[in-house]
Image (cartoon, rainbow, N blue to C red):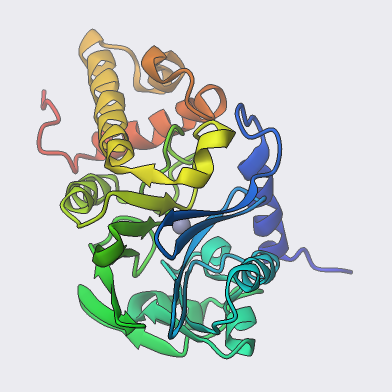
Length: 302
Ligand SMILES: [Zn+2]
């Protein structure tokens, strides 16, 4: 009897999440767009967005995602430059982001990942992940490509393992995976997020040196997505988390039974955000249960 392959199921599940209930992105968003001199956003038409920087001494790629995505990304780069890809940077350990590295390794690039993500993937390899060529430790590392500095920032246990935010100060650009998703509520049950650390991290992201970023997921209207995201979207992510928490507190204080709170909370100011209708209740369960368990010092104790 054929065994059910969990990894296939997980991949199919994530693909369906990418598009189910989508209000804006009716057409797959495949695009390449120059967001700063030599820095490009790239949409794979699959709900995942990458970035690359072209220099006269090679190309840096941010987020290979999957084999199919990486092949399309490599083809898009070849449309723009003959320079080889020198580095492909991975943001974190999750299979749906860390796949496709081998496509760039086969093209002669070195893949780069935080050691915490690499250790987890060594123990839990995905179908399309491959061991990185370079790992790094600690909170900050710089890479030089064509005379341009790429900053790698590990900001703590916010989501997944080894989560890295990339900044190119000279270009005032950044790449942010999963931590900021413009115009979209939190992802389903908010899996593998530490919500309190996530909020702290968002405050630190606001201090980083960039004006425009590529966010790995983006719920903005289709015509705006290729332009990436900004610090306004980081602030909106912070605001959404706070507004959801306050709405849950209000129900606690009214005495609404906990199991009825997720079906009760409404945040009409976010009604136009992607997945508001189908994910808000799941978001509320997760944030409420985190509050219930008491990691927040401002939870009213009775
Ligand atoms: Zn993730």
